[in-house]
Length: 217
Image 1: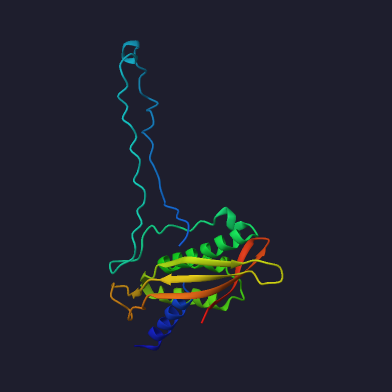
Image 2 (image 1 turned 45 degrees about the horizontal axis):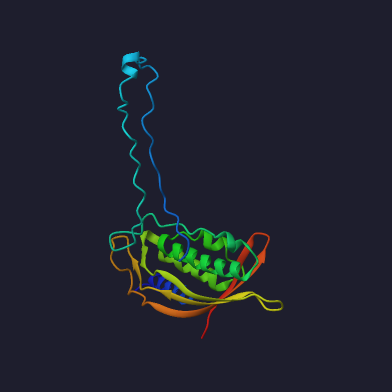
């Protein structure tokens, strides 16, 4: 294995350690009926009395989510949506934000897009930066990530005076496969994990920001 592959492997293993699905937003669209021809002749009174035969518009099918596999990366991945309660400086708000943060992390694994993850992570969150870098490298040179679904079944929040706002999170992540441009495995799969993490956050003018993240050992 080349040194480049080794760096990628380290990045993914590092990302898995932090691990840890949230709001769904399916892309949808519909098409209307054909517009009337402005040049068409006006119907006679006899024609007007006839029942309309205008066809009912047929809606365009919604985009369907397809998880990644050996044939290609995931398609139409639902974009996480920040819940309204996550915008409040409350225990419920912090819990909703932490769950959203992990949903964004899951989205980054599936798509390789880390912009939103960076946006909701503070500059001092070293582990957050490591996750971003690992995902970016894993998706480099035509590769993609398959599997690695993240779930947070249990989140316990602490929000009280004199204590850093934080949450203890149970993080489940499925087996991760990095696929090369030809669909073959780029490295050995990373096994599924069940870990505990401590996620600290601060509330500011723009809402909650993840400021620290680490494993509970």
